[in-house]
Structures are given as structure tokens and as C-alpha cells.
Image (cartoon, rainbow, N blue to C red; front, side, top):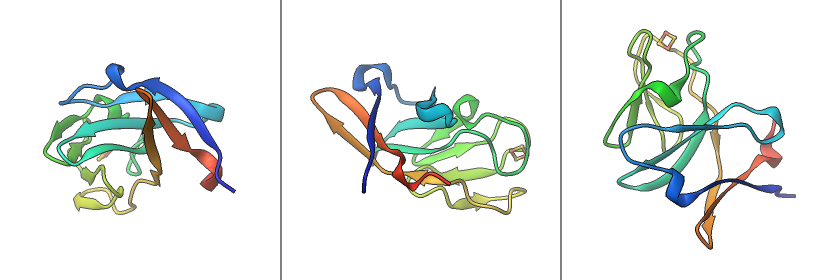
Length: 106
Ligand code: FES
């Protein structure tokens, strides 16, 4: 069963960087890129860096610590040194609000 939680206003999003949101105490970064709005785990899978602070180019975010690159659309790794993908979360936009489905928690 899905569990959509309102995490932000669509107007809070901007291109070039992510924003951090914390539904159910999860740490998730939401990105607005050319292909739409996407959400992946905020903490880098390689270390204690926040991907919301990373540089966004196209559909990719670059970790601010060691420059691993993640595809924000699915969390996959485009460039190391990270070896684990970032968990991706389903996103929907309704009435100007951003919702995440956190039922896939865990
Ligand atoms: Fe993100 Fe090392 S902490 S690449």
C-alpha cells in the first residue's frame, strides 16, 4: 500500500541543487531537473555527505565530498567512487505540492 506524504511545495524546488526533506525522519533529497522531479536518499552511499548540497547537472547530482555522480531519476551511479546506488523514492506532484511515497521504507 502506498503512503504518499506531502513534503514540500513545488515552488520550493529549483534547478541546480536539491532540497532536503525528512518525512518519517527519513533523509531524502528532492531534485527538479529537465526530466521532472525526483527523490533519492540524501546521504551519499559512499560517506557522510548530503547530496542536496551537491552540484546538479542535467539529470545528475555530484556528491560534494568525492564527486561520485548519481542519476537522480533512479539513484544509479554514473561515476564512482561510490559503489552503492542511492535509494530512489516515488514522487508525484499534485496541486502544486510534492508528495513522496514512503511505503517502500527500509
Ligand atoms: Fe559521496 Fe564520497 S561521500 S562520494
